[in-house]
Length: 86
Image (cartoon, rainbow, N blue to C red; front, side, top):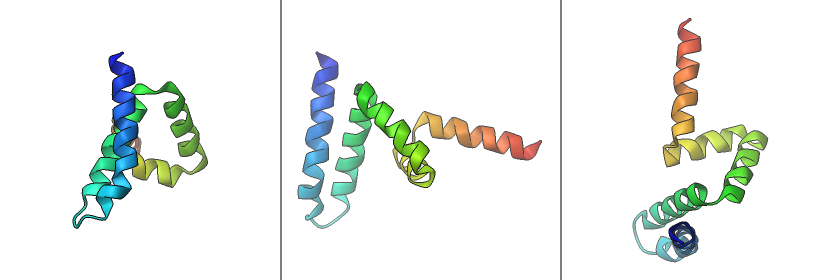
């Protein structure tokens, strides 16, 4: 039940982002980021779609990972640093 509530909250935040975006300041970006985080953490379908997006457009996927500060992006960057150091 909690997971569904968080998913719905994420959808509401994502839907509200364009509305908040017209207000001066970067509020819409934060609403969108929070909504995407909640959706990705609570929806397997959304995670699978996100993985496909990252495979299809790696630069966009890396950019989104950096914005959302995802753990997978941190691990990937750390691994890349270790490989480059060796």
